[in-house]
Image (cartoon, rainbow, N blue to C red; front, side, top):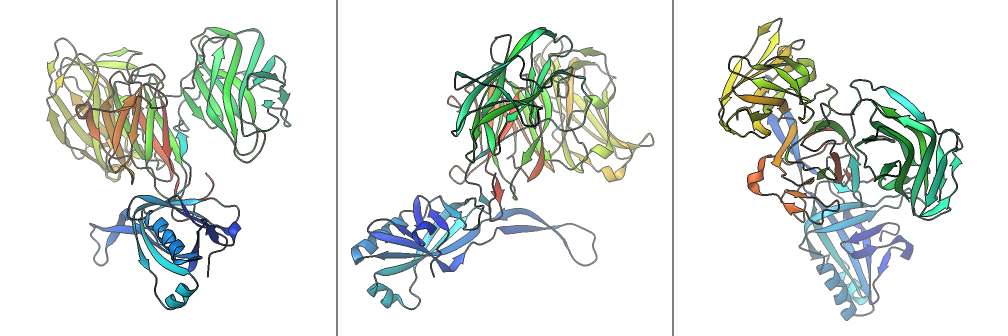
Length: 583
């Protein structure tokens, strides 16, 4: 029996199309997907035994997933044997190479699922009726495809890294609550267009008459100057004002007719911009809006406000953000860290799954004692401490915030005086009730320059087990001499992944996961937003590297570099066990 409602592609070859009664008409021959023998397969879990003290039975965990095997039977029909051979040739052209299977199920609403094929092969299906099939000019082939474990959505998703919830509360001043169109003007694709109020009366809207995309500017001019002293952050509650809409490009703002300013961070529909002006009388918002389901493109602004603090840890050179990863299965992708103008230089990127503990790698917020502290806006933490013999830098992080596992300790340091080797002594211990419970001591002697650099505080990892002192702290003590220390990081390498590179003068960094077509991970750097000048980073610029994987749900992303408020995003395919949903 033919599958009459599905659409099924093998690479660029259409196998079945419901609108044609299940056939795919290729002129001299037709193809059809047969229901009998269709096997979608399943990811093959790789299970490892976990060491335990159970008397009977074993603890087990799934460490990864292996390939799935899909099988399907294709009917080739034609008017003569020569045309049948052409159908076989078309099928053979798709085999034995990386490829894709695209399946569009018949149940509405429908989204195509794509399976990445690693390799495939074909056999003649000669089980009964083959002679009769030949008389009818029909041949049947069974194709086996070895695929990546999970299906994926058809189009890539770009997910921005956003500030997590929590932290100090900013002082927010509403500049315009957008309940009136007074002072507003707009353009649509460069031509003036009316501005109206949304039905709710709480947003100002510019709308196109139709189409799938439109470029908008919306300008608000105030009757008097609005001061920004002490509140350098301008935030917009801004979004496409129609169902199934998205931004074609991130909104920018221009203050008093000046140059466009790109967003620093975004949280839902709220987009934050760092502004150097001391006041403003006009703000112009520029962006493009894309319609996904035929609704007329529209742009809405619900609020303009200013606030005092940056949504960052320290100076904004180090940021703890979250990625909301969709789908139903783990995915990989290309993680980008970008700034429009400022070099990234020495860069740390760390990811791990959010578990609700509030874990963050920076330890300076938990500094207990140490050398003289000097506020410094050029550092990542906002301050530096002078390290001298006999006065260690001591940090005490609450155990309740930490995750069990093996941890790396990194410090951002520079030599004072003459550059050269420096000895760092690292002592770590859980503490409860003022007592140390399990002291671990290591040392390292790297060569340190007078420029800021990230240095591993000994190669050995540190074991952290919150169960040892659930109400206590984990102490990290670092001692050296003639060194300034900016920040210290405690990074869980059991649950997370770390990349540490020297990006040099490049303003953009891309960390690419391996794919079927390119099975090697890549680190690229460049300056062009579209990646046109991207180049592979030199191996001597990579200090640490582990492949970044992203679990479904909330993933933490910590970044540290020399650029202020560098944007971070993940370009990826949402992955699904077998059936994709709308992205």
